[in-house]
Amino acid sequence: MPSPQIERPDLPEYMTWEELEQLPDEIAGQIELWEGRVVWLRRGPAEHQAFTFAMTSALKRCTREVRTQRPQDCWRADFETNVFFGNTGKSDFVTPDFLVYRCPEVPYQDIRAADVLIVGEILSPSNTQTDIEDKKARYAKAGIPWYWEVALERERSAIRYVHAYALETTHGQLPPGVRPLHPANYLLIDKWMAGKSHGIDLDAPFPIHIPWDELEF
Image (cartoon, rainbow, N blue to C red; front, side, top):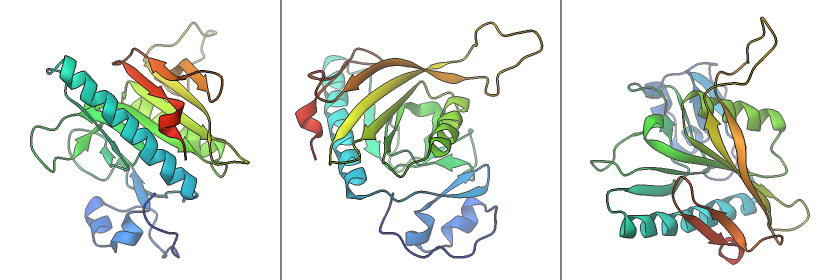
């Protein structure tokens, strides 16, 4: 969710990364490429960015604590960072609101889906269910192990709940001749309602303990 909303120019339905780079930053920063197809990112309210930063900051603290206890496990938390699908090429990518990924070996390295541990989205009231499910399906197809949803309240600047999902790569028994639309999907592992618990408390994929007051607006 870069920058304020600006008028969208008339662009082709499909573009390459190289073509995207030729656009002004304020335009290119509002676009994802889904197998080359131009997908405009929805702009959220100020709360969207505030809770994106808060969640990222909390996860940064957790990853630092993990490195202190297990130096061999180097994870980095960040926000609004492009995640590229496949081993090469850059014309298929998404930009999650926040993410945790393996520490790069060299600076300025592209983040590939294979290096990502957690992706997360801040769900504002303006998000549609179709938007959410389409993006979640792309994360699952890429094999990203964990997906988080942070839903915001409609009437006040606060988090309503946080859901943590883990990737399932096999499906249950289906009727003969029936196949799932997506071969991989996310299963809800845990959920936390603001005001109903002390905060987020999860031991996988590494110890994550985030009190609610760390996520206040």
